[in-house]
Length: 286
Length: 286
Image 1 (cartoon, each protein chain N blue to C red):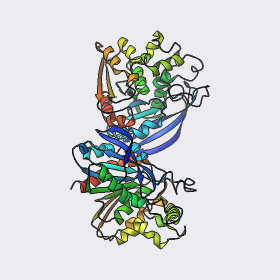
Image 2 (image 1 turned 45 degrees about the horizontal axis):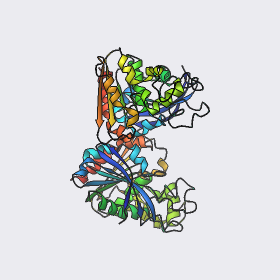
Image 3 (image 1 turned 180 degrees about the vertical axis):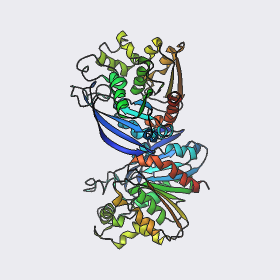
Image 4 (image 1 turned 90 degrees about the vertical axis):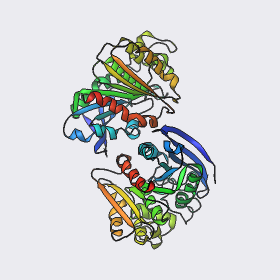
């Protein structure tokens, strides 16, 4: 288990918003993550929600802009906000695109050169980081949920759908619901997983929320999705694909709320983060 | 009256967070300001709170990090967040310091070369901008309050103390309470107003909240101040000076809350912004 180093610490809503760094074994690089410790964490273990950010983000965006600390403090929840990709790993071209490489890990485990050594974000998020968090902070290990935005909404959905039972609930803001059919997803999957852009490659489907929901056979999972109706990236997000896929699913309960006038920004996230935390609290506190 | 140009617009808590730009007559340059329009503003005029940001900030910091929109929407309040100094005016040296020149207008009216042509932030904030806001947005003209942070806390206090009766209430986070005795204040005042750093120049006192509070003879004014006990800039802020100065003041009611563990950051502001908005609502809705 790697050591963690405190990067910053700010009192927030009676608790503490901290950022730590550590050497990641999965990613073979030094990573930052944010952790909000609510006041209740001083008196004993509490549940955890993981937040996965979108394209171009780091661990900082959600911490500074979503306003989640207020509700985490009210309900006594730790929120962990990791970075979105490996950092400083010096792969040629990693910084060339805003939608691929650094800042755009897509929460998959790459198996293609030159990405496969470092770009193991799925294993990092679902295995290494939770182990680290559970060893260093007062968490209730079987009370964990996950949420995210855009690329991170895709990440949250596939983490919950693939690691059946690991997360008590899942939610997403404007998630990329069907990446095998989106331009962003095809670019990322072709790079990290191999295959051709412009085609629906079969081996990509195990990283696609819509496809995974068709074969999900884990415990009941309650999925809350908020989607702004004025989101300029709607063609990449395709909530209708996920809705159609889960129509007859027994174990998946999906509510997609189409929010009039809202866009893809953190103003949208901040407006509904309270509802998402309450969604998770239903399962984390029961 | 100058025209305003929409820079950005994001739906937020049922209302709209917008940024506009305009040509300022006082500042002789193009300026941005943020304005949050709560849902209630669609049905008629509402009160306004002005927010003044601190050193190095623009109109963006408060909008993105304070989480105020939630409470502005709940109470039906417009919040106006101006920039902190003239921009793009090409004065030699304006970008050399983080605590003087661009980003550090200090909310005074400069009378020294080369600053006096543009650096008229006091007149901009208390006169030009309110006239513009009242002409373009559905405001109740006699229901206005003001608040700010650090340099902007100083700004909010002097605006309310100098423009007696213009603001129904005032509040501040970690304000520079006695700038004539602080390093930041002395540097700014010497530059904008003339005089020597390291001395308490008499002609500075009309821009100092502690000094102004000693001679205030306007209508009753309720001042709420939050100050983090772990604020690393405490030596610049000197809340004790203001507290001592208003001890016997009849018209000024000052509550200074020393907040255990909090620092100078927006995490501190976000933690207590709800209380500040409620403080103003008491007077804006009565």
